[in-house]
Length: 146
Length: 285
Ligand code: HEM
Image (cartoon, chains in turn red, yellow):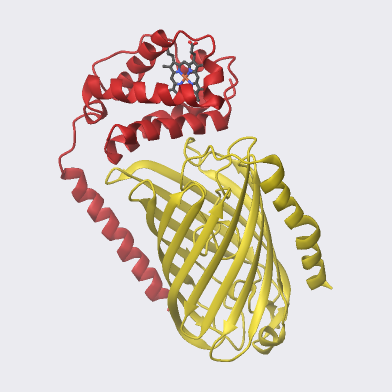
């Protein structure tokens, strides 16, 4: 009995592995940046995100003294860089940028949520969204509780 | 004695706490959808039959979350109905309660088990750290009617399971989709999860059981996957098999999720090849 179940589990696992190998060959945009729609696409996502941040009480309080025009520029450049676009982020690293802000896990979760909503709103395909999140998620440790 | 202390716990501790959370402190739901998993049949956040390291609901740091669930498992000769609820705080601790009622469709009659669960996140963040999220948990289980468990050779009508679970979400892992992987090790004396009592006449040792789940998030709100749960096989008069299920979970929003699964539970209390449907609905605040 147990043996039959095990065999079934393995056949499922190998089917998934095979499919993932096949899908690696199918065509996809060359970079996340292109997937986001290049410069205008990224700009639309950032603007959508900024509007959501402005409306979110929990997030907006961190930006009372921020020059939003500069922040918008910096964030766009940073995301363009992270997404393998034709940019190089010239600002400080994420740890230095967020030092002293004492951003919590809830703030981070919230911002990730707003970014997902913004990307969904702008029609970014799920694979591109997940690829961008994969690149941003490891920054968690540098951003929170600094 | 034990029975009444469980009821006492529910009446005096759990539900007042539950109501306070709902009505008093308010709640929050900063975490992203589906990261709370579902409620497993024992009331702990997880897959259908496996507790995961995730904390129930969508509360993040300093936030409360509460959930309520109802589950039915309909296999050939048995029907299991579960209601449960949980309170979580800080995306760190989870206190849960579940009441299982097993209808013995072919044998006649039914039996009931209460489960109080406590889970604590030790390290890691499901979405963000290279280290998986790791939690430890206990489940105190108490069966109300010992006649069937004792007839099949069980020793006790109550017991405690201890488990360690590690869960991680891998972004963009399969067809651009996110994949959740969970592994759990459970120390248990429970026969059929406790419904057939704890330990056996011959043996009162803890056994270490391996459990695993994999889920692919096909969309932001739809997950498909499977659970596998190794089980002890200690009873003289009732063989026991590992459990397995294939599920599809629809996370409608942060307040509502539905899980449909096809479960293969093997032999139960002398009835072989128990297969059938699993349906669970969870509400979260
Ligand atoms: C992975 C997640 C995050 C990334 C990639 C990120 C990125 C950035 C970047 C690139 C800047 C500098 C922009 C510039 O050059 O001016 C910045 C600044 C800032 N970020 Fe973040 N951030 C993240 C999470 C958060 C969170 C969760 C919060 C809090 C809710 C936050 C609050 C701020 C604040 C307050 C500033 C400073 C604005 C100023 O200069 O006044 N960030 N962030």
